[in-house]
Image (cartoon, rainbow, N blue to C red; front, side, top):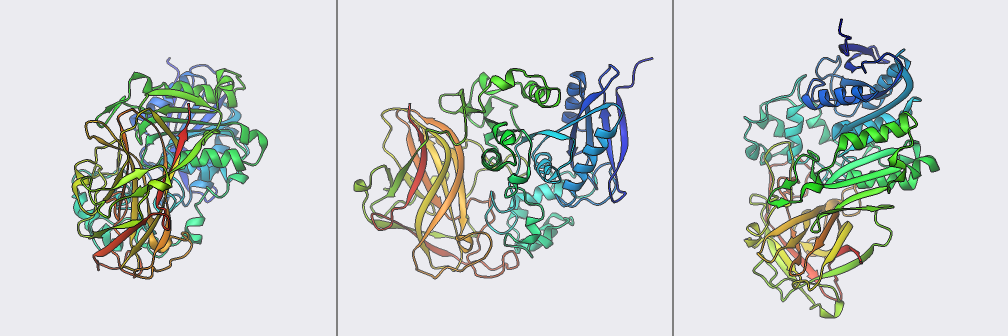
Length: 550
């Protein structure tokens, strides 16, 4: 008789007597094996989970793949993130107690499945030995510092409402994303969304959000971790931040030394195609992630000192040159952070304006550029209208025809220039509104005019001093604001130009600022705002690029 290699719907009791459902994949041979735990809100029977279960069981592991609380075959109520730390602890310790387990357990998973590994690690399950965290979201308000859920978050919340995945294809998402007030956006979907309204009671980083936060608590974690993401992952921010945070603050020297970072030219749905948008990154852009993950687990769960020990800590794909490079740390140790200044003759509106990007102060003309921001006609972020990938190496040349975007472009480069690392902007701005947004984007402009998005970020004026409190602007007063644009790795080729856009929206990636001083999410009022960006010696607005010298 054929050995049964999969046990379906195994019931795992939690500390509060709720039962979690798991499918358990076994190697064909008898014996004790390390366990790998995957917990998902998307259905443990999804094809990717089955593929992982079979792959790792074929390679000497027992894979325990669970529906999280309140989803699929598991009992209880699903509230995103709230119970995941304790439940993760209990699943890991259940696996470690089984007669088929060596007592060594690892975890893996992507996106939501990655972030809940971090909250699990904070519960310190004794038998958890390592993690692989792929495309992990950050804490609330880190990647989206707007005080409210991003419009696209509602489509994810809709997808996972109820016990099984909902069909998102029959909802008019563009109409939903424009619905005001934001607190009633769930009504526009026709479906109640758990926790949606409650989130608008917490528009600062308060105890409500801190209970599920992890990025301020790396000092409590003593684990080797592999971190995987892509430059065009819409939640890319979390992965380099987590790697750097663990390198600096993990509980022990061993944990600090044993972190690994892998960044490819990939979107959120990682490592599936060498082509993204209009750009072909070449066949080397795809790697065997399952083999990489297996070698990591072999090292930390089986004690196999394999080639993982000989590899550099950081593997990054350098776009533009389309090659992998291997480094010792992130940000790269020899990074030269260079300011590039925004300047113009007073008319930087659109790509047809006179905005320039220069690298020396004495080339700067003092002055300002102004534009009008209308929340009813926001400057767009090119995206799919779903809960999937929300931005790639898209061409912004067409939308740069608009007058509500300031465009600053360098002269064509005479030689290659590598930009690898975290990017940020420091801008001097004013508005006639008490609250508004400023969004900044970095682009590579090809000789044919193709304007390739690299990275971007936004600052909401009321949070210019941090997410802990809201402070109105004084209309007309000049403020210095910092915009984190996060990370990229791009070689600008000779003949290419560096471009920076400044607008007041990146919709629907970020919620529209309605330019009114009211409690966020509860008003349907909008105001047209007159915005001004200042530049020159007194107001040196700039983008700071991480330059890698050859």
